[in-house]
Image (tube, rainbow over all chains, first blue to last red; front, side, top):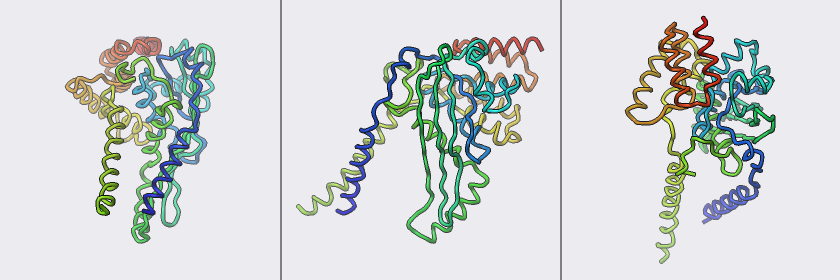
Length: 210
Length: 123
């Protein structure tokens, strides 16, 4: 009974929180609906150097599934590097008129990673991905949409012995694998696909599902 | 009666859970056949030694065939990425074919693909 009560309270809190976030104002977005999006490598403010490309490689799928043409991220990155813009910071400074004439994108997506990676405590490890994103209309320079996301994954249980084993194994796995990369897909889905907060559907999204 | 009261919530919870799960998964029918495209992009940066162009081309050609038999379109950027891998292998004709295919399936890519194609045919 106690548990059920707590569950009910938790659910109620969740519902209240979901309800209180006011819907995004899509006026500018609707006035300049893009067909195509160029995604530049994210600016990485975390200490994990894998952030930029660990995150970049998970952005295409949610955007494409929402109905947009997404320029090939690796080839855009390569093209920018060949043209004298070697870092994410420099790429994100590229003038909009050049993006229009050289790439032909309707909108550009600028992402900043504020947190990316895993932290280890004695018994647990915590993986965090936090990002903010801004979608800009290439022709007018207007901001069509912006959003922020934080996702966190803890590895721990109620069993202290199991925790010790998990922590040890986690540490070995985490240092070699990029757990934040897996979490990035989840962050993106939440960032772009949340109803009334994420992006509007693009031209390739099937009308029957809208 | 007392037993019924205890049993009831236990049944209701999984049913509600399944219903929510069905609702979520039902909404997420994929438009595209993704294959290994995003994983290859990730590995290109994270473990480049594991994904030389020969390997990427091999995996993506398989994806292409599988998408065909699944009767699903390949996602934006797939053909452009495969074309680039062909280019790295010196297979210019195959590269051009893929860049044209990207344009054909997604006319939004025309400006960028034409630029890439021009760069390729000049070399």
